[in-house]
Amino acid sequence: MAEVLVYVDHVDGAVRKPTLELLTLARRIGEPVAVALGPGAADTAAALAEHGAVKVLTHDAAEYADYLVVPKVDALQAAYEAVSPAAVLVPSSAEGKEIAARLAVRIGSGIITDAVDLEAGDEGPVATQSAFAASFTTKSRISKGTPVVTVKPNSAAVEAAPAAGAVEALAVSFSDKATGTKVTGRTPRESTGRPELTEAAIVVSGGRGVNGAENFSVIEALADSLGAAVGASRAAVDAGWYPHTNQVGQTGKSVSPQLYIASGISGAIQHRAGMQTSKTIVAVNKDAEAPIFDLVDYGVVGDLFEVVPQLTEEINTRKG
Image (tube, rainbow, N blue to C red):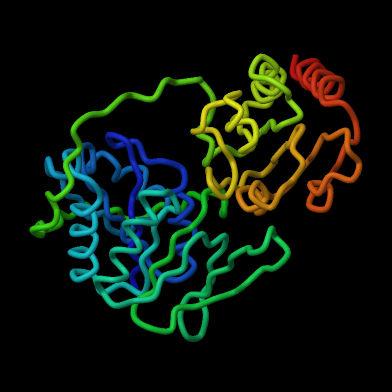
């Protein structure tokens, strides 16, 4: 069976959930070979093997931390040349998509971004994408070169499938461009205790209808009762009510949770583009004609300041 390269997203050896989802998808089209780079790369082997990686190619060097994405592209290209895979899968984060795009250019291959599913086809892997505010679902395959595909988080269930997970050192020679853009400083992100927005199984978002930064506590309370991440529409972010890092939409982050709850969000196309692939969508809005209701699975026409606290109270009562 052909091998499939999977780029590993990890933090000091702790593998992030989107990578485990990629291993599930990779097993549909071949044998997963994971590529782990940077500090703690070797520590990823156990988790990757547990979820189907037949091999784990590792490499650590100061360049991965000191410079932007080019060193990682160099390493992934080295892995590609060593393995000759049937496909290359990368998590669909901002960094992941840049790495995938640069790799595709280097190896002369086509690229598919933001896939939500992947299956084997007679002429190569077939990727599913959602388009035009979930009005259309497309199926595509790469017609030139080795398919490079980025996959949205929460696109597949994580499945354990123990494999050998043999660790092998990857030989990497960095290009002249690898050190072209240096990282001069880092500021640790303040932890909220909530899940990462793009990886969360449940997202609760607030919009213009929240009507003020002080009122986002209503949204946060519901999110905390569900163990969810908090999102915000562009209108709420532009008004300064919530940080830009939590913006969901075309100019913010793209999410695909199991459950998305939109409160006080009208449903402009800009916002819908960032959450349209959510599995179940619930909206609370006092305007019965709001465009968001065209997209939802369940809609509540009512004042969010009455509906959301009642929902939070009911969830907490059932939990405890």
